[in-house]
Image (cartoon, rainbow, N blue to C red; front, side, top):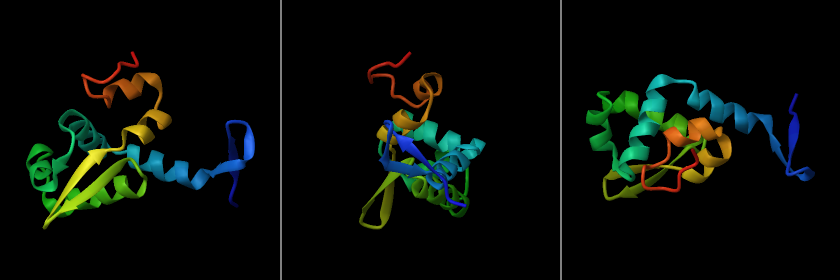
Length: 113
């Protein structure tokens, strides 16, 4: 059964629970949270660097990155043969509480805390 919730009080721009389910499932993993944190601190980062940063083989890292991409929590840009990932700060800001949001904001950005 597909349910919808209104956004900004209107049913015309309703959002499905399925989208939120994907986002929160993506957030419900310690490794994915670590990946997001590192992307927040470093900005646009090559997958080759992420493998060392999070100490994970590229095959496992790719699995986690796909989940985060599908949930819209990160973005991907391909340059030649390398993929670069970045936190989708707009989505994070709209999704997370103020307390959690501060964890994923760069230090030089406007503080929410």
